[in-house]
Length: 96
Image (cartoon, rainbow, N blue to C red):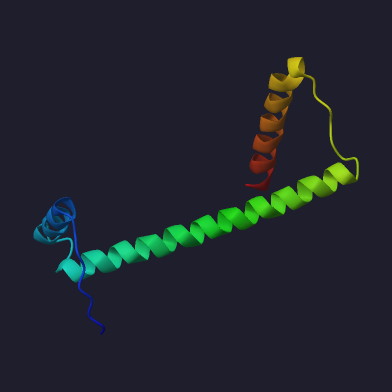
């Protein structure tokens, strides 16, 4: 297995030592590997969120181009958002 030298702040060093002493991890390498796994997981989630947002934006622009939208006045926005929330909750309830 490849070996790396890393420089940790005093706080990070204390955290690593605390985690190892707690018995949760056998050694500092396990702590650092877990941290890297968490970074990978976070990056995968963020990538999935970005793709979902990009798809939603594409769909939104396609809907606007096709005339599938509603004009909502400033005085109606809260009611409109409430209606959207109720429809979303109902869709989830129906799907579940």
